[in-house]
Image (cartoon, rainbow, N blue to C red; front, side, top):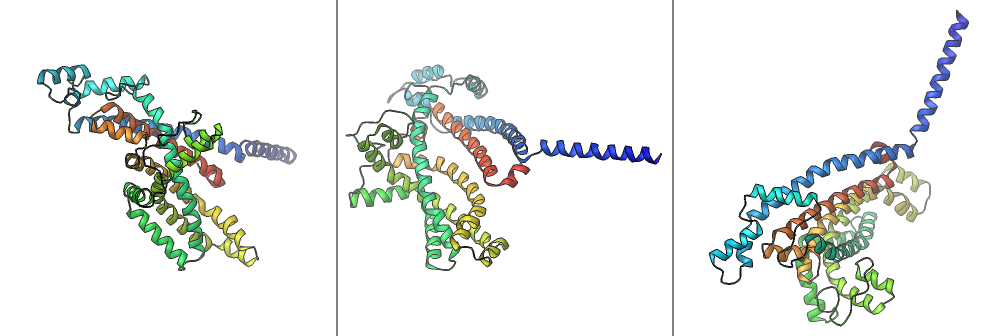
Length: 373
């Protein structure tokens, strides 16, 4: 009996070890990250679909509730009631809102965002043509903000109470208080009207420069790819002021969160241990503190980017920038429903994709996030 029990116990121990070995191989960090990535994608898609449906319904109702009649706008300066009613029937505005929403949803399921009444072109093609201009402006403003905010926040955190810290607080306060369109008007007044350093704020290029061949839709990148330095300098000159206007607006939250996160990290035990070990200050601040403090900055960066997508609407109007924001404003003034609805839906999809990208970057920066997603 004892020999049988001993053999049975040995076989049980061997079986447990084999199960643990296979389980450990299955749940390697790489495999866990892949499983969590698929689960994250499914969760995000599951929450994105109801959000997009809600955006479609709310946008449709808001555009219909706005004052103004598209039929009266397109009927001419002195329309008759008969002509207005005829145009309303042609546009389908004489039907109930429920029938209009049903027709609009059917078009969306077939990939159609409608046709703009002001330009006569499909809304989707208009948005795709103008989207690179808006993205170039948004990315440039974000690059300006990152280049100034992160170094300023790091230096202010390493020298609390110094003049650098006071400058950081002043800049963040001013950045929060000034809306980007006002900053844009102020920059135009100073650098174009008074000093004459900046070109006329009329679009992406001046009237004497031809647009480069389209590769990415970003004039600065396309001109570099083509090797046309003259076009690159002209496009960069037109881009500086609107990018700085957006950069000042987005600099404030980035600098604040960088400073706060760095102060918290620099007071941690592992930083004190690193200093006691005699490591160089540069390695401690950049190699250890900033690397651990960057996660809240990445989260704020995603929020700031989504804010800039909305804030560049007025900046595009101030600088006559041919992006999707100015297109939506012009359509809203003309009571052209389809472009406004398409713009809002487009921004909602970009915002959802941006949140997904931020989650993936989180997993790359923080190994703990890969195991707990």
